[in-house]
Image 1 (cartoon, rainbow, N blue to C red):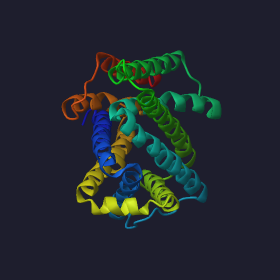
Image 2 (image 1 turned 45 degrees about the vertical axis):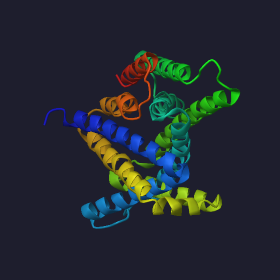
Image 3 (image 1 turned 180 degrees about the horizontal axis):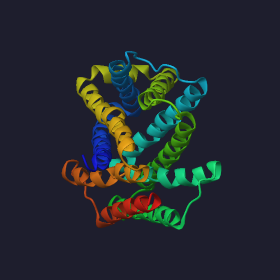
Image 4 (image 1 turned 135 degrees about the horizontal axis):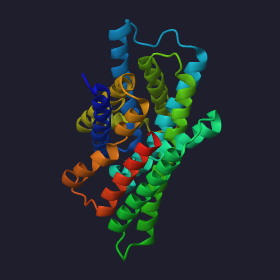
Length: 301
């Protein structure tokens, strides 16, 4: 089928859009740490079942120790640290703006790849990075204007600034996770690589919950049937269907096209933000989303 890879990449963006909406809802009910822990727990379970169906084994087989190390580290940095900041950003500034900030990971990854691996950036890539950052800045300004009445208190201003900071830190973590994945994924089956990343994330979130004495919060989330159902659905669309479609897209289309199309979640989030969450989407936010996506397209031109 023509353009099947591109269609799968768009499906990835749609899946991640749905996952973001589910997770924002779940976070408002039971908190960030329980949602993160249970999301990757469900993802680990789903991927184990897929692995068994494909290979007859629930766990990855024949993966080198160095790959386990890099992929495990990428899972911890990308999911445990990155998702902690991202889901907190959902709480402070909403999923649409938070996801746009996370798209900063694309130019950050490109810059880091140039410094670490010597991957040269052409003029189109540099222009795309500038346009991406400009678009995100416009969107943040639009959200800031919407959420900042003239009589806004200093506490409310700090609340918004903290959300933006969390969004930027999620992008930094995502970029670091991508670079670690690149270092460890060579020659490793895509399902196995994803299993290692998500499995290490589950171990990381469990340890964080244990050391912070919040396992009781995770248990409470499990007992909240509505929250558990929302998280399980979010995990289906996030680390399961979304990642699966992305891997399929990479196998059937160019990496640049796939990266651009799968990054459209911030644009897809704006309609449900307006019509489902009943939040006003300003012209600045919409225009900033378009600029950011155009910037991503130029980076991978």
